[in-house]
Image (cartoon, rainbow, N blue to C red; front, side, top):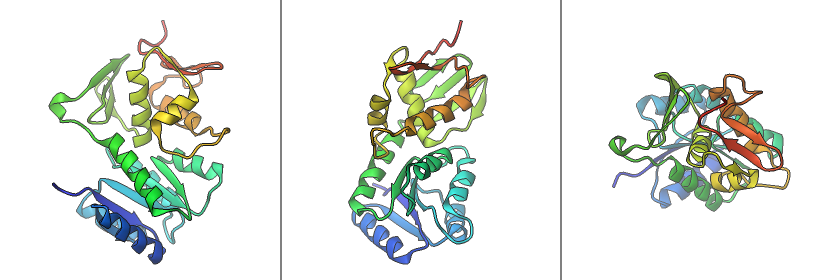
Length: 233
């Protein structure tokens, strides 16, 4: 069986080598890069199944790299690493399209658990058995992880796809923020964690004609969110 490929990009050779050695021991094929230039050389040859990306790098930083790569339709999931551990930093990582965010220092076993969770969510079935969902003018292929509106493809991040899948498979049901976070299984949580709201707002901007007055993803006061596939009317 072909191994899943992970690219690890970090300017700290100690962290880079430690993560690469550990993940290789867990059965992954690992390539490393010290900066954005080195990463781009790897990407030109082949896309990985997942990218581990450091925030603070010389030259082009991780946020800029993530934003640039996320503009490419179908780019693999990204886990962001950073010495910045504040909530606002995690939210910024989400906003640029990271699928998960892990503050430094971290235990390699925790990184492995995050990688497995993200890759599990990104595993797709064959195109001929793909799950397809229609709502309004949108068509979502949940296995191919594509979304189109009237035939025009809409680019979503991995986190946005995951959230969309949860909504369309639990339509017309009020979903609490805590339940949504449990389903996403990505970020560490605290009682004041609002990262799910960031994801919802990002997804609304992609599918709502008026994100401030949403037709599909509605806020249920005191309950959470409600996905209404028929929209308003």
